Amino acid sequence: MASYWLLYLFIYLFSCHITQTVQEEIEYECVDIYKQPAFQHPLMKDHQIQMRPSVEFQAMVSTEPETSDLFTGESEERCPKGQVPIHIPQINYTNNFSQPKKIITEANLHYAIIRPFENYTKRWDGAQAVFNIYKPRVLENQFSKAWIWLNHREKDVISSIQFGWAVHTGLYRDDRPRLTTYGISGRHPNGCYNALCRGGYVQLHKTIYPGMVYNKVSTLGKKQSTAHLLVGQDSRTKNWLLMTRSTLIGYWPYQIYSMQGASQVLFGGYTGGLAGATSPPMGAGTFPKEVGYRNKFSCFMKQLKCFEDKRLVDIDSNEFEEYVDSPKCYDVWFRKFEIGQGEMLTFGGPGGECGI
Image (cartoon, rainbow, N blue to C red; front, side, top):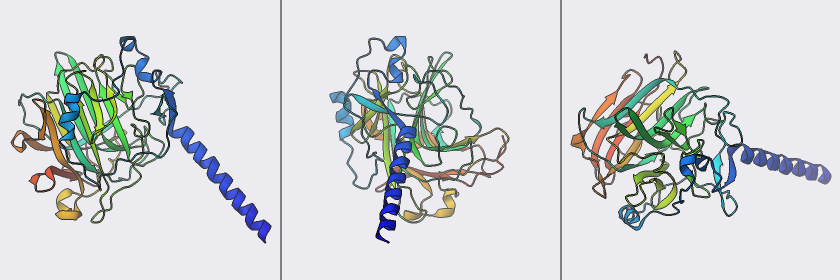
């Protein structure tokens, strides 16, 4: 009997080791910080890596109070010194990440957001939010996001830096929520997720990275798992920094993302999938006003702030309006200012046959 249990224990431990090894091989690759995809572009040849925010930028961010219940999603694994984690997508990229063998196609897009009023002109140098994290059920090649857009258009060139959490079965190998980023520039007019493109996002942190899983998710009406994310343009270097509280994760380099501020900031939910197919749930899968107040929130984004005139301030609720393109499937509720929450919105919906 003893030998039987020893054999069972050996098989169990061996299978766990194999599973963990396969998981690590699939999830990310440790890459020399100077050989990551961002530096495989001619414009990045003489780029000096920004290892920390400028003093001025750090001072703006440091005025924000640290909150103990904010879960960053930091991974336990670490890359060796001099290397950084680059997420390996489900789509099959070549070794240098520069030529995808399969293109991510996104269609059937739907929004439940707040946006500046039409024809409103202003410059924002970044934005932040505290997100609660859910795991909406999505089918193959669908996505559901809690998202912030920093958009800018100059003549015929559109630039955009986008970030938040996403469940994306076209990009990732499973349906877990993950820290996700996306960038559009004159150099990447078709867009680029995470750190996958030459001349794109530069990864710095050893354990927090785009593509990283948020293992703790919220339960409707019960405990909420949250994460803070911020993107702002450093006035000294002109790079666009991705941070969680005062921790620098990485950045979009000014050589590629040269926009001087954003002319539009959007906050809210975003879904998509195959053209003609049903749309996935958004957020907690419920309409926000069905759930009510206090700890029974649907998916929320709170402490909505923007960088204006070298300050990180609450967004002005008088400058934003609600926008939903398919009210039968999704909704957004701009709760505006609430004590302890700041400027806040809730959003979500069950999805379904949402139309074009």
